View 1: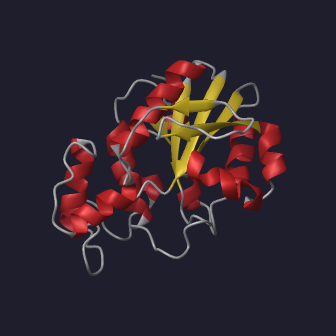
View 2: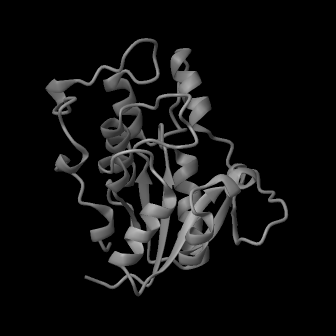
Length: 220
């Protein structure tokens, strides 16, 4: 295994993951000189408790499909397997313990900066990892963190709204993600239908996914 020297961690709900996420992650990989970007879907986001997301195993399925075979990208399911809310500091501590020689960079959207002081043990997080701000507007306000900026007008909220209204979302999400949204009938009224005939039942856990190796351990 090639040792990781500079590791980027991209946490979030990814409900759903979309091309904007992937574009900014690729920009960070190249401009910061990272060995790998690991996408980490939240089990329960402490900042989005008002709106239940799609089931975690389905969000992970979409994410794994989106980054499959993408050079330098991977995924990790630890926050889905961990009980309770998904706090960034817990994940960064675990990653630091597993990769003690790697410099860790944690990505955060510029829309989250105003509430950064409310994050659990934010000072401890900043002591372990370098916070990298993603700006999708191409403009970033004053702060002390490095910025990755690319004008990308795509949001998960807009995608969910379009799907609920029966409007197309092709070109906003990768084609494999679009297929999963359609197959599971995500973001429509009523409960999510997980099609067990396709091999994804509600009893499957994130650690049982056979098709995509855990991204942290994949070195491509």
